[in-house]
Image (cartoon, rainbow over all chains, first blue to last red; front, side, top):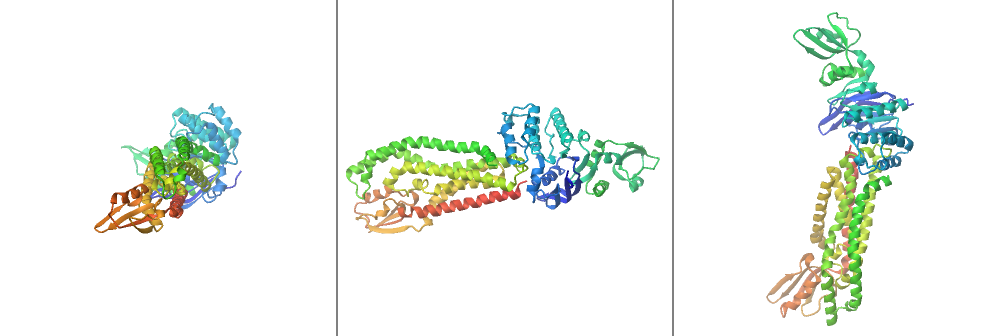
Length: 302
Length: 312
């Protein structure tokens, strides 16, 4: 499809006033992947996405989307990307029909059939005002607007954050259908970890304006282990493996490690961990120092 | 994009157009009545320098009959400001509601978006100002024949200054709105700012844009001809042991200065006046329009720059 990576950032940083919203972000998201951008509120997810779609300009570093700068070569990038911003803003006074007409007027690659099919499947009347739709329906209309321009790359910023559980499920279902139908590259941010594993195959963990971990989800899950053993110092393990989180009780020590090869120490019981636990471990970890940051850099280098 | 902008601007343009229709509904019937009365009373024949007694009566009757409406029209000086700030609302709303993020991630560049989103309200403002000028100029024509058009209320709604006022109000609301991103607040503050700017120009700047004329004449003889329909800045009588001043600033009107000599009896020997004669109408209008349009363009350029560079 496209030999360029979908998204490529090098030393990317954005500062608002004296505060860095995103700092020293280097990552690559391959074309054809479905990537989850995970982190707590204020971690820099929205900043990264806005830099990617050219809404804001980097303070440091570079970002390239499908091989182009989204800010300086907007004409090359904009027609190829779809973006649904946080809170999925729409013109509330427009009817659905007018919203689609807007999409048609502003996008040369607009496919009206895609749009009308989706609206029909959602069971929404074309004449209804967008402002009177439910949150879930508005999110679906915003997604329709982004999809009908036939993008190669779809960015979704917290698409389900404001939705109730049912609407959340339906929305993610829609995204999965799109991916399986078109093979579109998708980057979506979320502070909710559940469900992501079903939809996504790549993960970027952001916390405190820094990337903590980047990589394919199966490798991430395969690379992490939970070590449980009698209470001990973690220093011996830390020489070989990256200790992401450690917790001690009176008798027992539990370590979550990014394993570099096999764990040979027989005093530890080695357990597999699920993605959610790994994500929580990284989010709970300091960003400026320690193994998490080193692990993030390593993952980037790979 | 023009369709999109029009669709977003529709409500505000219709509001502005609605204001215009209301004005027309008031002005058209009364204007026709007035023009008819003007002809019927034969006032055109009374415009000479020395009107006859019957002319005085006819003019007095005509003026007292239509004076309330004429005074009402002085409030119209607020309308260009009102229309200007209302037309700025859609642009600011877009920033306030975050919908520009939707627009800027379609396939058009933000530069193009900004250009069209600004061009449409500017065009609407110019069009509406033009209609406003034509309407009020036509309506006032009989009064202008009698009293000239240098008086503040008349001067403010004729010629070209209305274009300047409307664009200035629009630009001020845009400039405040792109920074503040609150439509209602920006509109309110801009309207207050418009009002202050207008007061400043009306009461201070206008008398200084073009050097006013000075005249001195004997109180017993006739005043200079061009003083009749002039904007009188000050008028002063001097004589043995007597000195008084009248008609200072924009309040000085035709009615005031013909009343003075009558009350004086044998008082002052000499009259002095500083005034803008009717011949200064177009130079004054030109300068004032230029200033308002110039400031408006600067503010619009600022709004465009700020939106392009400082909005994410």
